[in-house]
Length: 223
Image (tube, rainbow, N blue to C red):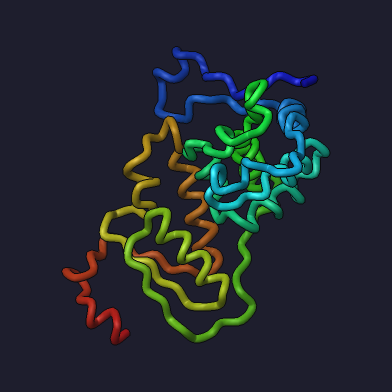
């Protein structure tokens, strides 16, 4: 293998003591290309099998796009199977890397960090932008809870043209993403960036609303 596995390095302890930001500095674009080049485009890519990515991400395909410097194409492939790659790239335990065929003889491809880089590049370069549905079905959907599952449901249903309102009993949107995962693993600016995008796409978020107390279930159904 021409290139060794590389992952982002930690920021200095002196800097990390001054804030609660993410621990790692990203690699350079050229380094990410090298890491994408390590993917062998296996005949049977176990990284996206039932032993690898539970989402079925098309990992070899977007690794190759990164290697070629085609970041927008890589993002398009990634978004086909993953609503929020900027989250999973940071916090997923990476079963795909455990299933990577290269890992039999060498260190596996640094899939998660490539995924994170694709998503962040998408926001930085403006590839990810609000995409409000052109047509609405006039069906109203209420989603209770704004954790990862609630957000994914809201995103899918909104793109299908339904009018979606998400109810959250806490004072901020995000659930586990906001309150359960520390900022040094998932910067809250990353979560807020996605929420803002979803709002711009037409999703309504109502916070400090406890369904069953502030609004009864019957009232929600009748509405």
